[in-house]
Image 1 (cartoon, each protein chain N blue to C red):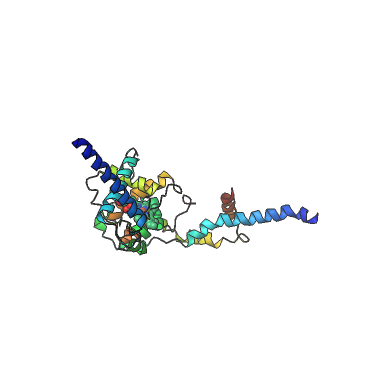
Image 2 (spheres, rainbow over the protein chains, first blue to last red):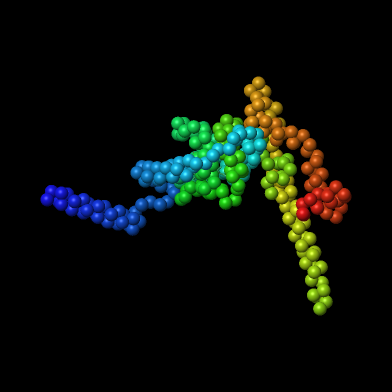
Length: 186
Length: 97
């Protein structure tokens, strides 16, 4: 008897929640503009969804040996400067039209990442490789895999590991494309 | 009929023009690429420079290439196919095949 009452109220609560959720969804009340931040609950929901998904997908990726080489830094640095610096900044810059206007805000990749301090360097590299190759849905982060092979993406990952160490002068020298013979970038 | 006889010639000419454009466009892009500002390297703290550091090696590679600035200028001067000599004729065939 008590079980049936309990069960009945559970079903009614679930139905009400579903109905209320649907009502909210169709009401158009949730602010969708990039200039209004998510509330904490939505933020937590989306962040958890993203981090769990990336971690699971990137888990099996093997990091190639010898990432930290001057060749990788030169290839990855020039690509980063051409394709990423507008959103992810470069040494000496603290904001751009993209960091001010996009939401989620593109993280400043010239800062040493402390939020993943507990992750080892292999985990960081795998995660970055996966994100660069596949992009992130419903954010400004594009997938670069369709237009760039894995080798070039790994070179960008290698560059990202050293980017927080670079001052503006070092960054300029390493990322400048001038004076190359151009053979590898046709 | 006369028109038909000229078609392959026009086609060849058009093809030649397209190939010339293709062969040169990456080079032309290179001319407005940013040059590494190697002068700033001489102001850096030399005591902190570690030649085993890939960052340092990468900078040295960038600036070694800058030691021969005249070569690239000569190449640019030869973009006009009319008046270039043997050397650039070799370059062209390299691009087109």
